[in-house]
Length: 473
Image 1 (cartoon, rainbow, N blue to C red):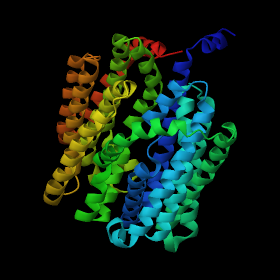
Image 2: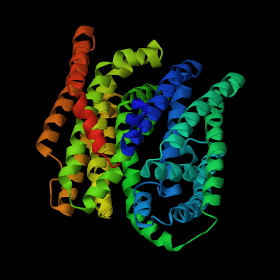
Image 3: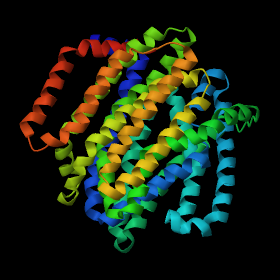
Image 4: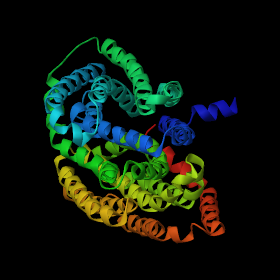
């Protein structure tokens, strides 16, 4: 009974963060389990084609769905607390209208861009159906996270993470002559069926009440952000498209494996940030920036340690998730992870910027960074190969972090965070990212770094727990 009471008294925000983290770890774990299967069932060229398809899905998804489930939806949860069901359904219909319009234009242009995107018409239609129903799930997840309702979120995150790759693998085994299409259609159709269920749920929950009055605010908020969201994605994934065009699909496969390994650190950040957003909004309403910093800095420290851990274990992880043919991918992991560390700086500063409803400013920073990235990729991928893309991404995320911080200072006229400490963490991560390749053959040195970090976490575990208890109950 004492244990039950202790669990019951844990703040809701802590429970939610823990549940989101565990769900993310399970999802990532399943991804790591299936990646070795994919790399063995598919040729490097087929694996690279899948990576390119998923890249185009993400790029086209931004204008097709207008990214309405991001910052503007959280603001809607705050502004229309008594009308959240109605608001969600109205946003869903708006997203559908935009999707239909986008794909009408895309189909008209298809004959002219077919060779550029490298996709058959069947894949275009698959994307269109996906974009019609996916927002329902995204809106539901965003609201659950905002309200700290973690149980169903946990369940459906795990179900989706298990079903999609399972069906895809079965399809690959059944349709060996069309393994690429079996992988793509098996995975995406499974998700579409799940999304249809949430589409019906949101529609019924919202009682089919369509209120177009919400549309104007959402469109005005997100329209200037579309270039930002698109540039943000291009900053992280244009590498794959350019590697495919400038090198080969096989090189894209190697880089994709490196990116998959590098993204494991973001599991921790995404779980924490889901609860950090409403906490930040609440404290900003009181101009209590000190509390925001007192929570964010320890979380950023944990994330920096996770990034270093991923870098140190890169050879072992790549050996697990891929065949020996992919081993050279380990040398792309350190700079990619370094870039991921600076990528999360955007959410730190962006949470503040979005609270004050000044989204247009971040667009400039992201466009500048994405443009620099594309130019650097074109120059250095051609000269040094696909591994150079990791270093160009690191540089550009660093540029974006600096610009986003300058924008936040302009808006709130306050440092908000302890920037001296952020600078120290940044120097450490950059140093490890640039020098770690030299010690990959020295197992003892790498493992010593990991043991030291674990010891520090154990010593300061109470302070770490205290940070999460500060998040809104």
